[in-house]
Image (cartoon, rainbow, N blue to C red):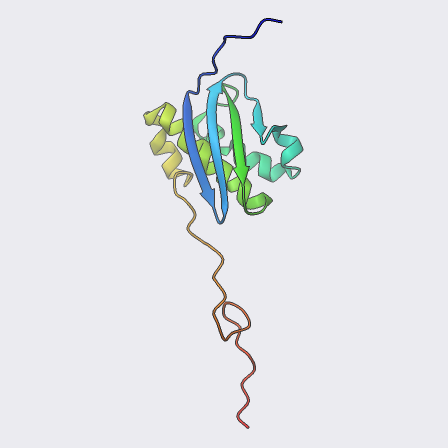
Length: 136
């Protein structure tokens, strides 16, 4: 059995983040196939809106079906992972072609969403919830 000497060439690379989810995105030549953690996109993200989020940067830049994506994502929940993938895809497209950045920026896809879960403080029940006050 002969080994393949064909080397995989990444056209662009991007790291996307949202809450505690981190996605590493590799942009390759192809026909629009998306692989996330070794599974096809519709197997990994069951919800159609999450699949649409991942493909949104392609719709904004009108590059649907021109690239394949290989994404490694971990941390957070399913919706946070989908938005991390979207951020990573936008960054990967910009690393491939710098002229796509203005369109992605106007659509709000280049900005990392800074909202995080507020931490629980000591002496409290939660992040903001206090224990019930008793005067006597």
